[in-house]
Amino acid sequence: MADSVDVLVIGAGAAGMMCAIEAARRGRSVLLLEHYSKLAEKIRISGGGRCNFTNINARPENYLSGNPHFCRSALARYTPQHFIELLERHGIGYHEKKLGQLFCDDGSEAIIAMLKQECDAAGVRWCQPCSVQEIGRSDAFYINTSRGKYRAESLVVASGGLSIPKIGATPFGYKIAQQFGIPVTKLKPGLVPLSFHPEQWQPFAELAGVSIEASVSYGKQSFRESLLFTHRGLSGPAILQISSYWEHGQPLHIDLLPGHNAAALLVQQRGNRTLLSNFLGQYWSKRFAEVWCSQFLEIKPLNQYSEKQLAQLAAHIADWQITPTGTLGYSKAEVTCGGVDTHALSSKTMECNTVPGLYFIGEVVDVTGQLGGYNFQWAWASGYAAGQAA
Image 1 (tube, rainbow, N blue to C red):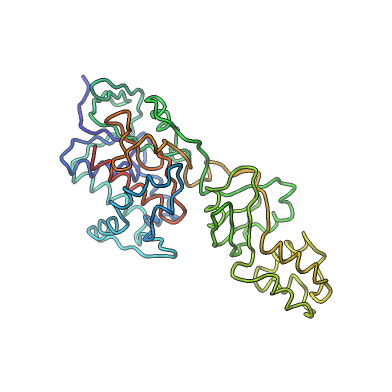
Image 2: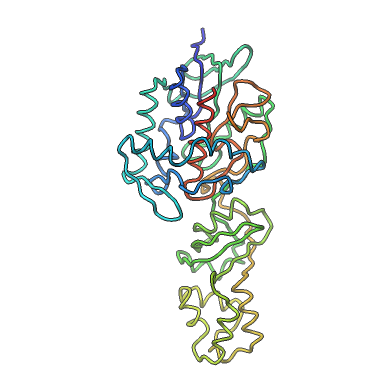
């Protein structure tokens, strides 16, 4: 005999807990299933344990999706201010670091405890760890699990994406979508460091740990933040941001002196007897200046270069084109790009258009936020939308 509930939520992460809270507050009987032994590991490790829980600037333009307008409704109905009010009700302090990124003063554990408390107060039942073995559908959804059989009017899939498999990420949500004929868009790692061919990267590998400010562009997207050299390639906020947009085999365009006119800067220095690397070392680290300049010119005093040589160098500074060979994969990715096709879902409720009662929320959906708290805001907003409807 199956245990009957109104709403069964698979995945007790940010989106799943938010959905469970909202559905239970409406008087629905809610069961929250989680296959992993630890609760909300992605919240726990985010922001270095400080949890960058939202971004006060969150708007649809900060999200990548095959259907760019899909996220508008959910983001408008559950805003960063709504989540801030929830924190304040629980007496949890927070602070802004930069660019609208809000972090928890007391660390991510405070957010997890708050969500767990909200679930318990609303009457949500827990089943963890619990793995789902089979899902069927007739008059309702029938879910066979390692902890028994359940019947549910509504089934909400909040199982996350493929990023960071060591904390339990699996393709489970995509398999459910495919079982019910819901299309899944192309998947790839997002917010992830980029790698280069070892021979191509060999001159720069010694710069591992060096960071500079740069503007990194691909297509119409451009991010001006820090860029970090690693043994295998590039990381840092600017690279993580562009990685979600970058397509394999295509070059990146990097302005190494954003906010400066490199050509005018070098032409002004034509009479200068300072070594080129020392001059550029005022803007970059000296180590980077030496390694980077040596790829294009023999390093000598500025007054010994021709105007043409300086112009060519300035062009490379303003638009350094390099082509990554790939990414460091899902193990180093913060999110999964792609997912359950949003054209198959209601933007107001997250319910499948062709399978009444089946909902997809959070990272499993083809909505990927930029770096800086945007993905958590999507989790809260999509979870809220489904919780108001399921």
